[in-house]
Amino acid sequence: MATAFNVGDMAVYPVQGVTEILGIETLEIAGVTSRFYVLRRLDSDDTIRVPVSNVEQVGLRNLVDKDEIEEVLTVLRADTINIEEPNWNRRYRRYVEKIQSGSLKDVAIVLRDLHLTRADKQLSYGERRVYEMAMQLLVQELSVAQDLELEEVRTQIEHLLG
Image: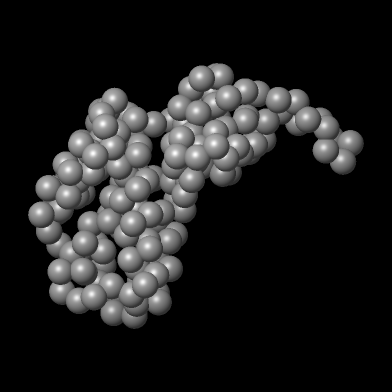
């Protein structure tokens, strides 16, 4: 059963971050009429249209709840990397896949693993970009879900990472 959203709801779109449901439109494309959620990214004025029927396929989901937030914070507290992949290219691809999954817990795993890797060796350019993307996605969703300022959440995450 797909999640139904209402105008004004906040939803998370994988890789894009937290969005607000601005409206629900009915559009005809190539003779086919479909309903779309109209989303606005919180960190820009970009709008995204997602077919209501494709919500699950694209991974559009509700914000994390209290229990999920605790799981994410537990992931960030861990001080070991789960899977050590010596090949940076494969590691990078694995991190990107986790971010694209849309799971905030997966995003937290990427951030933690890259943070721990950074303590041992310099991150590649691609890994640094993934690190910043993971940090941004995590900070944004946790701040909206907990109604806290972005900087407050970023400081909390940096503290947990050590």
